[in-house]
Length: 328
Length: 126
Image 1 (cartoon, helix red, strand yellow):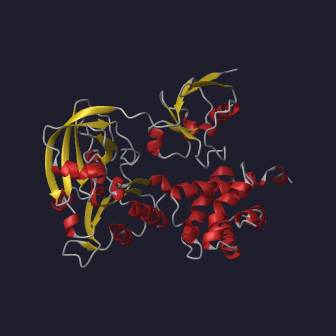
Image 2 (cartoon, rainbow over the protein chains, first blue to last red):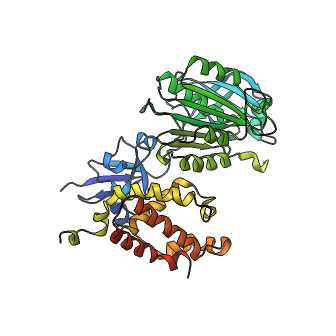
Image 3 (cartoon, one colour):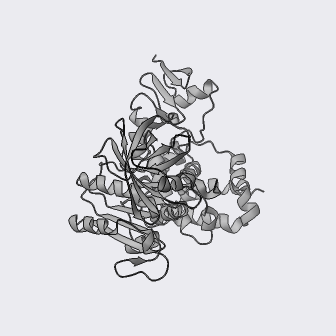
């Protein structure tokens, strides 16, 4: 008989041999979300807090979820005591000071922070930035993993946006902010260097994508990498020359700036970034797809990419929900 | 007659068969203009997991089929978007089409279709 102790928050359950973690929790009336009990619906996904869970319990999960020790309670027969959690860990914040502030275009600020402690992040993840009075917003890290203390962000000024207006107008070099632990599952892992990649971003959705591209190229990613960056007008885009330069430097990197309003000038594609991308690349079978920006674009592109043959397992998305839509 | 000792799910090929089928089936459903508006505001990743649970059930596999949940999940589609028999029929068409594409023998297709058909009243809230 092998009995293993399962610790969920501050409760302890003994998992008996032949019993899954889900069975043990439910037996003790700890009601966690679940449905099919056979690894299909993934509603009982939880996270191991003390290292990798049994591999068999991660069947069918996306690589980034496996990488962060998520597993399915209904498939998990513990092989040792486990500490597990249903909720993401509480935000840990470190202090950071502003060391750079410049405009990328009229509405987007490139903010560079120097963190007191090293952050273990992956290109494409986001952090929460917290002002002294507690006002907090999520921003994607725009650089790759080369720096452990220095992080860059693209902060788009939103009309009525309390944080972004403040960052644009009042935040100065030398000021301090708090930076949370990195979060999110839309990031690059160098596990399939030959896989073709499609990246679609709108507005400051370029931030995480630029980090991901930098990371992929740094790892010698050999598959094709196609970036489509879209905005209504050319003014809403940025880093156009930088991306063109990168495309000249790396033959497998392809860059298409897209404008959706009016006629596109020479060198720009006309139309929404996702529509341009999908008409340029009719078959996405076997491709990895990254989508960042407006939630409607992300949702629509996921569906389009899926119908063009991409597998859901290979899709990574970060929808930018705007807190200031309420103009609070 | 060794076949009779195998369950429908085993004869179809178990979970691997469900995985193969769900990919074809869900693409057919989302690509069908008669019915894809019902999926317009859903997260397609969550939907795909639900489709997999549904197909597992229709394949006679392990499931927790719950008619009440099925009713609840489709109630607003029936009331607000006019989900009716014609749409259910379209889904059935894609289900059998998927199995034909996977070269599943007709007698097994008939069994799968019969199980799927048994959810009609719940889905349409009758």
